[in-house]
Amino acid sequence: RETSEERRRGASKRTRTKMTRILFIGNSFTTRNDLPGLLASLVSSSSAAEVEGERELQFEVISAGGASLRRHPNKGDAQTKIRNGSFDCVVLQEQSTLPIKNGKRATENMTEFDAVVRESDARTVPYMTWGSRGRSAKSGRP
Image 1 (cartoon, rainbow, N blue to C red):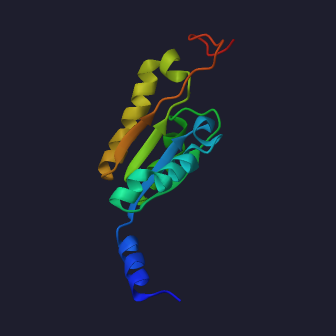
Image 2: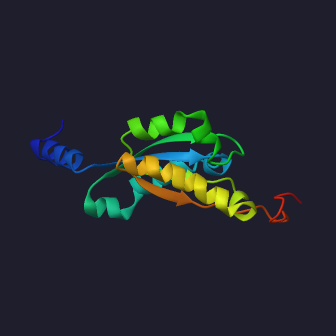
């Protein structure tokens, strides 16, 4: 049976929980190794959580294999999710070779999303990945 002291500590712990909601938008570089889930695990197990109170990370993912960010606004789901999702942060992951092949396009894609994110009172977090070894900067192919 739980004592009143244990119940009080449990209630206090629950009220100190800090929830952060993150939307990840990208491709397989975001989803293949479950980056969102890994980050949620790190947040919940961090020693900072013991000092500052419990932390919890909730996340949602919009992903399309091999896609650039441009594909998501063309489809329309991402903007709706940003506007209606009450997110604290939106993590944007561009297709890995686009910043090298077409830096202007990559910047336009990020800027377009950033405007929608700011309108929703969230923060934009760029997630930059890497190009594959042995691929040329010009074509992205071996």
